[in-house]
Amino acid sequence: LKAWTKVGDLTHELKGKEVLIRGRAQTMRAVGKNMAFIVVREKGFTVQCVVTAQPDVVSKQMVKFAAGLSRESIVDVHGVVSVPSIAIKGTTQQVEIQVSKLYCVDKAMPTLPINIEDASRSRLHLHPPYFVVEQFLLSEDFIEIHTPKLIAGSSEGGSAVFKLDYKGQPACLAQSPQLHKQMAICGDFGRVFEIGPVFRAEDSYTHRHLCEFTGLDIELEIRQHYTEVMDIVDRLFVTMFDHLNNKCSKDLEAVGRQYPFEPLKYLRKTLRLKFEEGVQMLKEAGVEIDPYGDLNTESERKLGQLVLEKYGTEFYILHRYPLAVRPFYTMPCFDDPKYSNSFDVFIRGEEIISGAQRVHAPELLAERAQACGIDVSTISTYIDSFRYGAPPHGGFGVGLERVVMLFCGLNNIRKTSLFPRDPLRIAP
Ligand code: 4AD
Image 1 (cartoon, rainbow, N blue to C red):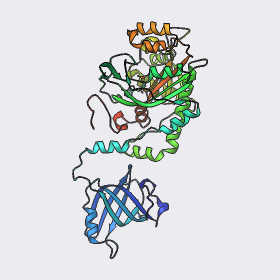
Image 2: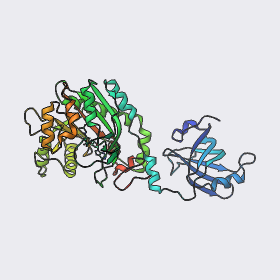
Image 3: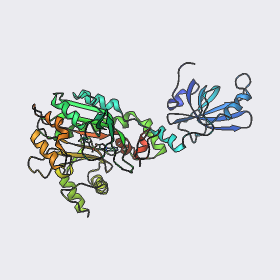
Image 4: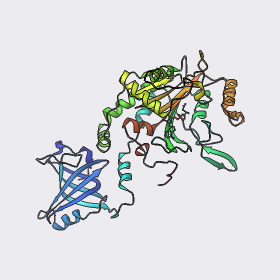
């Protein structure tokens, strides 16, 4: 038999069929000298394999060999699918394999070099559906770009950068593609996106901060109003959530078996709330917020609860943030410069996106940078790129690990990353 069957595809329909699978030997159990059970796991799916001694097919030595496999060894199992009369407990698949051949492809060490918590975490690793994001954005006329990760100055301001020596010049790892994606817009790219690593050196020991994460960055020309940027958020995320629910149900079930969660509640047209409305909702619930300050983690959570109760959604956009709490490149509101043409997006009360219209007039940009305490000389090439005429534009940045964490209701971002980087962890 040459065709491989995935463990996750083993169902009643295959009853009586010969199959060949490869996976890891999760548990072994002998019943006397003539029978052994092995639970084989592949990508989070498990199946019970029954090795029974039978003349000319399975020897007693083979039963002994099966029972003595070391845990997590990689095995090939050849056999016939059967359906037991009683329900099977402890495996994801409701069929068994009556084994005729068993090979150990690679023997695992008797003691695992990684702890079991790490092993189950990496099984859980659920890649954000990149291709759905790419397909959607390409169909909306976006061009994929790759911006440098070695840059001269910080892009988001502040000191949270990894500094390095660039052939004698001070440099750092990019905190976001922000400035370069905007320069691409100045170069008439129209609409651009990038999926790539983002580096943050901040000392955040929380459940939702990593020092390196995968960012999805988007930037586009605005024709009339910054809400055009929010329209993209809306369509992109509804497409992505629909895809996860409709096409990835097996993976989501596997995650849910380990860490149970409720499906995300979201609307066909994403709710948009103004910052002022959010402040008002919080006030009515007894939480006082500075109307020109930022929300803290606690008030964001609380507002998420209030929004769920009132509008029945766990995914929404909060826009028109106070200007004072946004980065220097954010466009002030035309009707009230205390506010800005900006927004954050939340899943289950936690931020996953921040976005805005950008200042595209070089004088105002320099003035805003100065007001935010930035040394204008360090960003002069950026400011100069707006001197040749720049279209009004805006965009946003998403942390993809956070999206997966919150979509799956996980309590820690490290569970979504195969090799998480945080202030205390740089290996493996
Ligand atoms: O809010 P941030 O810092 O915004 C920017 O980088 C802007 N340049 C985006 C824009 O186009 N205006 O980061 C964007 C998103 C956050 O909403 C969050 O989801 C994620 O990136 N993020 C992190 N994810 C994991 N670990 C961290 N330390 C993160 N910092 C930000």
